[in-house]
Image 1: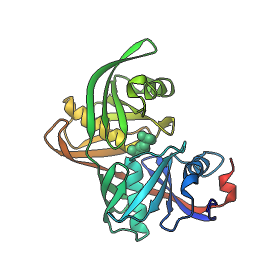
Image 2: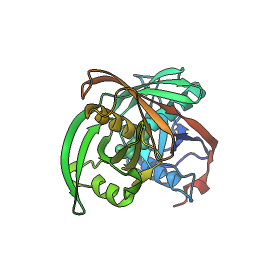
Image 3: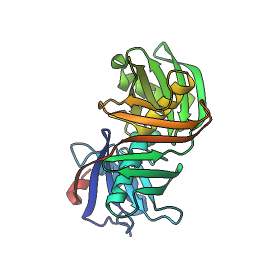
Image 4: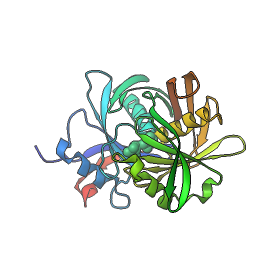
Length: 279
Ligand SMILES: N[C@@H](CCC[C@H](N)C(=O)O)C(=O)O
């Protein structure tokens, strides 16, 4: 079968401004070989629903369900923190899983708890920490830290977060040879009087998004190692919404339980038709 079964019911959800299309795909509707193309079409803003990413919920033999996750450009990514929180609420509201659930991602098993419009996830173990790499971009040197929180993230602490050229600088770092071949998401973190602000240039969206869950976790863990923060760490994202990261275990890179908490809202539900898929 190479055709897409239409119409397709979907939910549009927002996790702190990171927005997603979520489809119950336990009964297959989109052939495997057309999933990336489908994601590109439905995520395209102004021409279709528009979103930062697409989730297809599928059956799992190891957990309550598993997902296929595609960025807006059709690339498949291992993990998405805000998407995981939205998917958890979707699964709970569709009776696919109980309020406490486990689901399979390419990064590993994610645990989640849903309470009203808030969803908390237990992240897969962060790994590949690197600190204090000096990287030159456009004749300027940046002190860059990095960690994989399910997907790769670079973290840079800046004095004035409003002044960062997200598209110019974000894009150059995202494609910097140091991070090849996978590339990286790029987070700029600013310390405010009583906390942190964070802005993320997302791989696969190829732009700044309003929030990035795995990016907030990367920022919080690196801030803790640097001695700037202690658990729980709240970071205000570009859309103005705070996400909270809680972790236990030894302070530093040896953290064994990392929780990400924040809102997961249903924006609307609808049906995708052939007109939603126009290139
Ligand atoms: N928005 C996500 C991260 C999604 C994956 C990322 N775009 C990538 O390809 O690495 C989040 O909330 O974590």
